[in-house]
Image 1 (cartoon, rainbow, N blue to C red):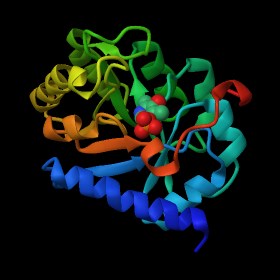
Image 2: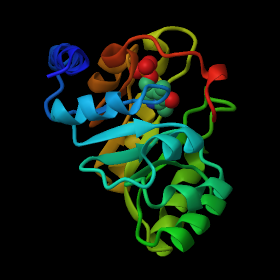
Image 3: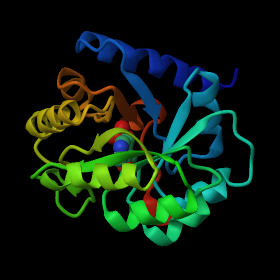
Amino acid sequence: MTELDQQVAERLAQVRDRISRAGGREVAILPVTKTFGIEACWAAHRAGCASVGENYAQELVAKLGGQQLPFGVHFIGQLQTNKVRSLVSVVTVYETVDRLSLVTELAKRAPGAAVLIQVAPASQEGKGGCPIVDVPALVDAAQAAGLDVRGLMTVGPTEGGPEAARLGFRATRSLLDRLGLSVLSMGMTDDLEVAVQEGSTQVRVGSALFGERPRLSTLVR
Ligand SMILES: *Cc1c(COP(=O)(O)O)cnc(C)c1O
């Protein structure tokens, strides 16, 4: 066991504890390994996590591309259609499907791929996400294109503290139920309690597990 393995295992236990104190029962933890080296992915895997979350296509391919991996990779960053092709051999779930052009590209390059539709609650601008009123039509289109729509994903606001996320989270959960979908990816290090209280089934956790991220500007995107 490396030092990193030990750190990740301990911090995962702390995150599990936070989830259960917030009343979460079966909430999965997706360790977010963006900007951290491949050792972070392996440490999460060895600590029992089924998948990791990554944001940047180029970084991801450089880090994990071409290897046979015993864990899944969820793409959770803003996704450009021209990057899809480079990702199909690595990504197991696309969490940020938010527009028709992406549905079309994924259906072509990764037929039957598992996807979540990213929902943008009213407060979210410029971070991607499908406006909540347009989500049902996008779900229909993705299903009609043969994609495996497992559920919804959303990102809380960066300002205003955890409580600022609550109403958007609640609206996303109620949409999930109306659509009869089961997976809800919502909540990060700072707002996971609120997300769990509002019905998240998967939290995406980076800094609580791996510490502060290296600055992005120093990395290839
Ligand atoms: C970076 C990122 C996370 C993890 O953020 P932390 O605050 O480090 O837990 C979760 N979700 C998305 C979409 C991210 O970009």
